Every structure is written in structure tokens, then in C-alpha cells.
Figure (cartoon, rainbow, N blue to C red):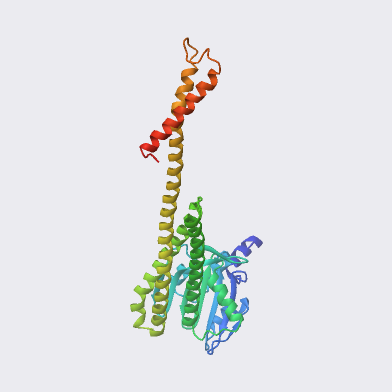
Amino acid sequence: MSASEKHTTDLPDVAPTTGIVWAYRFRPDGSAEPIPNEQVDAALAAPGEGWIWVHLALADNRCRTWIAQRAPVSELARDVLAGPDRHMRLDVVGHEIVGVLPDLHQGFAHTGEDIVRLRFTMTERMVLTARQRPVHSLELARRAIAAGKRFPTAVSFLDAVIDQFADAIAHMADQLGDELDAVEDHVLHEEPADERHRLGRVRLQAVRVHRQLAQLKNMFQRLEPRIAAENVAVAAAIRTLAQKLEAIDGEVASLHERARLLLDEMAARMTEVTNKRLFTLSILTACLLPPTLVTGFFGMNTEDLPFQHAHGGTWLAGLVALAATALSYLLLRRMRAF
């Protein structure tokens, strides 16, 4: 066997050191300790109290190989963890809960506004999470664990992760509301500038978030009766999260409606300003038409023009033009054109 063939054969057996972002073992009291990457397989296989959380980066192909060959989960969980499906889902297979949930992208310095996907599978003693891009909620969970927060059960951990996503969406809704307030003040108290770009961004973000929240809320509501018969604690957590998501979704929907109404108000005010300017231009045009006719008449260069040989004829012609302007103005006022 050549060296290249041996390398290709051994590749699936390489421990996914770079694919595992982090791993923790939680004791029955909820306290956590990190697990070295090379000990993850042994920790998952060893019986014991507490539970284990392993977080995986799907950008590493060795991680996908580990999920396919070594992860102690069902075939459905393998497909969900490493598959390309981006639709939200939540399935119960025996004692295993498998799902794809939305989350916010976690940048280097701040939380982004892009919606990404968090894949997970959960049993009583194990939670596997996987992502293609860094997610905000899991980063907050890791920081909370480092700060000493306790998660005695896998259910409490998953509940906290989804709750952090809801809090992040609520914070985003507050920011969108502040931006709408600023646009509203500018539109209602000043001559409206073109704020359609800002309003369009708010409406687009509100629509995207509303769609994710509505799908997640409906999914929880459909799944709750199925889980309630087997696990009351999980069903109660899902019910609480569904209620919180419904409240946040209502707020996001109201922001979208505010943005739509504000866009209509801005369009109406800009139309009003345009109409006033067109009206002023129309009055000026009507007042200038008679003197234009007079100057055109005196500019024909034909014989027998008035004031052609009179002393100061140009000034007399100018007075006739001014008189025509004054007469037009008085007629428009008498007709109550303005």
C-alpha cells in the first residue's frame, strides 16, 4: 500500500480535533468541566451521571466524518446534524430529540443580523450541536458556563439556548423600534427626506424575523402535545418558550406595520410637498404667459409696431408687459386660484 493510499484509508479515523469547537461534562449539580477533544469519544461511551455537551463545526470535513461514523446517535440525527437541510424542524425519535433551529450569526466583535441554522440532537445524557457559521446563543451559553452558570439537565441547557435566541431577537426588535422612532420624528417634524432606504431595511429585517419566529412558534405548539405524554418537563419548557416567542413575534409584527404606515405617511407628505411646488410653478407660469406674449408681439420686427418711433418706446413696452403680469395676477386672485 502506497503512502497516499494509506493516508486516504486512515483519514476517516482521524480524531476531529479541529471539528470539535468545545466539549463539556456536566455533573448532576449542573457544574461543568471541559473535555479535551481527544477524550470526547471515551467520555460519550463511558456510563456515568450527568450529561455531556459537544459542539461541532460543520466547516471541517473531519467533523462530518465523525458524525457519520462515531457519533452515538440515530441515523436521522446523523442526517440532520450533517445534512444540507436548512428548513426548521423538530422531531422526536424514541428518547432522542432532533432539530434544526434558527439563530443569529455571531461575529468577532458583535452579533450580526443574519439568520443562521443551529442543528442539534439531545438525549438525557448528551447534547450534540453543530453549525456551519458561529451562532450567537451558543457563544452566550459558553460564556455563561465559563462564568459558573449551572445546567443540571440537557433540557435546561436547550431551554436556555432557545431563550437566549428569543432575547437576542427582542433586543433586535428594540433597535428596529429606535430606528423607526428616529425616522418618524424626522418625517413628522421636518420636511421629509428620502428615508425609504432605512424604512425598507427595517421592513425587510422585520419580515425575516417574523417568518422565523412564526415557524418556530408553530413548530413548538405542534410538538408540545406529542412530548407531554412522555416528558412533562420538556413539554413545559416548550410551552413557555412558545409563549415568549409569540409575544416577541407580536412586537416584531407591530414594527413591520409601523414601518409600512410610516412609509405611506412619508410618501403622502412628499407628494404634498411636490404638489405645492408644482402649484407655485403653475402660478408663476400663468403670470408670465401674458408678458411673454407682449414681448413676442413687440419682437416681430414688422411695420407699424406700437412705440416703434416714440421716445422711450422700450420702456413703454416694458410697462405694458408689467401691466399684463399684474392683470394676470389680479385675475388669478379673483378666480381664487391661490
